[in-house]
Image (cartoon, rainbow, N blue to C red):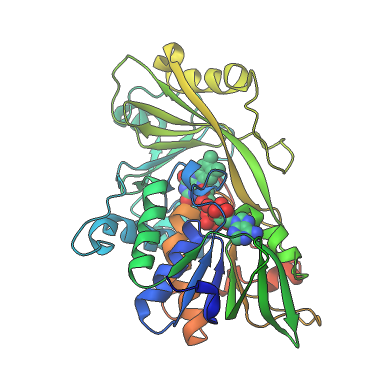
Length: 397
Ligand SMILES: Cc1cc2nc3c(=O)[nH]c(=O)nc-3n(C[C@H](O)[C@H](O)[C@H](O)COP(=O)(O)OP(=O)(O)OC[C@H]3O[C@@H](n4cnc5c(N)ncnc54)[C@H](O)[C@@H]3O)c2cc1C
C-alpha cells in the first residue's frame, strides 16, 4: 500500500462533511485538480452537522444569491442518483419533491410578501396563499392565525447522509484520498501555509488548503490566526408519529420557528431554541418537547394532539454568528498572517445541504480558474467579515 504521506498534495481539504466532499467531487471531476486529499477525523460523522440535518432544499430566500445556490442544488439533487452513479450503480438520496411551505403566524407578513416578490423575480414558481386557499390545499393545518403563506411546490428534501456518502464515494472513485486524521496545527511562512500537522504527529503538505470543517471551522481557522466567526449551535430534533391519516404535507416552516417535514411513516423536526448559547451539547432537555414543541405542533396541526414521540436527537448548526450566511472564497485581508493559499467554505448556518452542490462547484472554479464562472459567490467572501459588512437573510432563516 502506498504511504499517502510520502507525496505533496495539490489540494488539501480540511473536513469531509457534505461541503468538503462536494468540493472534492467538483475538483476531481474536472480532471485538472491534481492530487486531492480530504482530511476527516471521524468517518462515522457522529457529531457532524450533515447526517443530523433535515435535508430541506428550498428557494424561499430573500437574497437572490441564496436562491441561485438553492436552485442549483435542487437541480443537482434531482439528478443526483444517476449523475453520481459509479460504474453504472446509482447513488439514491431519497430525493422528494414535496414542497416547502412558509407560514406567517407572527405578524411579519409584509416581509414574507416582499421576499415572495424577490423569489418570483428570481424564477421561483412559488404561490402566495391567503388562509382560505391554504386551508383548501392542506386541510389538516389550523389556519386561524395565519395571515399569509408562501408555498413552493417544487422544493423538497433529500436524505443528507446518503448525499454526503454519494459525494464521498464519487470523489473517491475519481481519485480523491480521504485521510482519517484531525488537523491539529499549521505551519506558514511568507504568506503561504506550508504544511499542516495531524493528530498522529505527521504532516501533510499541499499547494492549496480549504477549510470546510463545519462548526469546527472557527477553531481550525484560529490555529493560523484566521478569525472565522463560526460556532456550533445545538438544535434538538424529534421524530414523531400519529395514527390519524392526513394529506401529504410539504416541509413546513413558520415565523414562530416551528419546522418539520414528513419522514417515512412519521415526521421529523422541532423548534430551534435561539436562546441557547453557542457550544456543543449532548443532553436532550427533559421537557422542551412537552413544554414548547408539542403544543406548537398540536396548535398548527390539530391531529398532532395525539402524536407519539419516537425519538429525539441533537444536531449542531454550523452557525456564522456574524450574519448567518456561508463564508466562501479565499482568505483575504492585509495582515501579515494572511495566507493566500487558504480558501474557506464554512458557516452555512442551516443551509449547507441545499447549498453544497453550488458551493462545491463555485469554489472548485475559484481554485482552479482563479474566478467564479457559473455563479458569482463573491458576496459571500471573507472581506465582509473584515470590513464588518453583514450580508443578511431577511425573514425565516
Ligand atoms: C438539526 C439540523 C437541521 C438542518 N436542516 C437543514 C436543512 O433542512 N437543509 C440544509 O440545507 N441544511 C440543514 N442543516 C445544516 C446543514 O446540516 C449544514 O449546514 C451542513 O451539514 C454543513 O456541512 P459541513 O460539511 O460544512 O459540516 P459537517 O457536516 O459538520 O462536516 C464538518 C467535518 O469537519 C470535520 N472536522 C472537524 N474538525 C476537524 C479538524 N480539526 N481537522 C479535520 N476535520 C475536522 C468534522 O469531523 C466533520 O465531519 C441542518 C442542520 C441541523 C443541525
